[in-house]
View 1: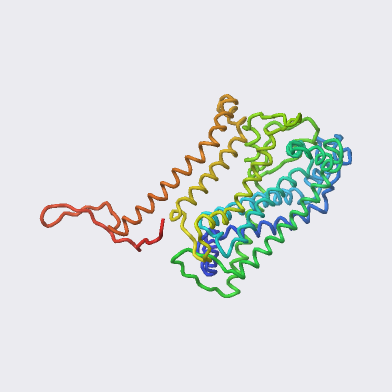
View 2: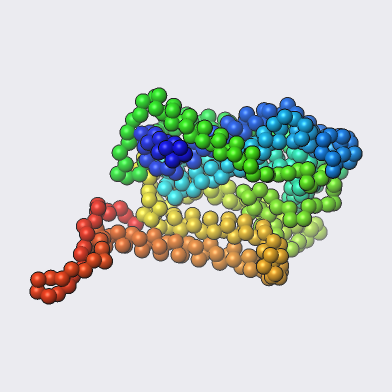
Length: 450
């Protein structure tokens, strides 16, 4: 059944002029957001964004009689005393994970196929903004239960804000409302979470309008077909049903964020093995491997060990990501509008740059588990940390070089096949007694520039 669904959806994609399964990532992100809105509206009816102290007297026996915030108590009641509450909570959490993953994959597709070129530069910025907002929504949403695990994220936010020169202390006092954790951070993050959702909705609506006005991109050689309105609606409904079905299965069978196991947040404590969401792993990895640099500037300590990986690194990442189309346009001088997509191998330098960026992200993500690697493989934590410090510098350079050579090699192979044919590995004997290999003519000539 799922195979038939994907076949129907692939036909719709081709009929819309897209022609490749990777074009479904954008719609998966939109449908996951719809699930987020529906489940979030349900959760809003039972969650209390307050840090007022209370004593839990709900169904979960382990924490009965324990003092905690109203936010944590309402999360426990939502999980154990509201019919379907735990299922909706878990679907909401999984939908957030799928949303960020789909946005990231959509950016990968657009980057490696050059779907960001004119006239779709604004579309690229929309997806970059959706990635940033999705990460921010994930962080704020994770903190809202006010459990011991979310307290680790809260402490990280505090440290990053305090590392900002000159104004860091004032921003911390304003954000937390006085002493950390204060009594305002949960309500403010709750409001921020809702505002982020509205911004995501606005960007998705803008993206839809741009898509209707500009049309779809396609690969060279594609033959777009047009489906009637009913067929398009059926195919879109089928994909939406598939996304909802997968999220329902994950919410039912795969436990995620069991806040009752962590207990209420207590300042100064943290859960062992606590790590952020996978999409924020690069931030945690950078914090773990950054050397402890704290120079004094005009008599004031500057915490570069937190400032660089916590603010400078993500800021530089999103700035370069947003500005890349303009940078490439300036370097190549290509200002023409494009509807045809590139194959990654046809643009070796761009593909190599993307591979280097993915490698850097992957290494920082892996560095976020340096303690787990050291524990499970019985290695020195210091040795693992030092390895990642060198790897994040050398790894992207190696990935760039290898990827570029692979792309150039594939292009050269295609040229050779276009000129001489495709080697089949079959040998035949000639009438005169000699031998020759059977050469199959190429399917089509390759005439794209490297």
